[in-house]
Amino acid sequence: MLVPNKDKIVVWIGNLTKEELDEYIDFETLGDFDEPMDRFAVDMGEYSYEYELIDGNHVKKPPPIEKLARPISHSGAFLKQVVSAAKELGIESANSVVTLANQELHVETWPNNSPLTFIGNFDFDRSKK
Image (cartoon, rainbow, N blue to C red; front, side, top):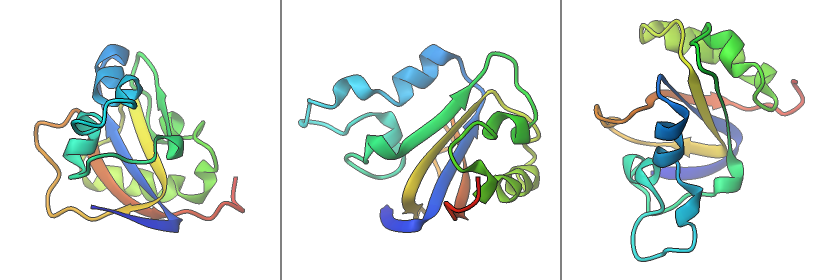
């Protein structure tokens, strides 16, 4: 469940193609309200989310997490925490990172079949670049 919190950011990391990422987080379905927004929403246990708060980076060859996440807006506010949490999960590099600002995600477990790994909720101080 997503909980609004202007001082937090949620981070996911994975290794997938650009096409797989675009299919997983599908902004094309925004007008269809008969079903959940996309598989990303379903994995979060949500019907939808504020897509304007999504940021991310995708590259072809997986760099270290620090290099992958650095281009995200205000990454200085959470980058060290994300790198540390990813290492605890055994993730040293990846080619995709997705963030959702101003939110906290509360889930008991993240789906094993998700193309992204939930790294965690992190403090989000916008005064840090």
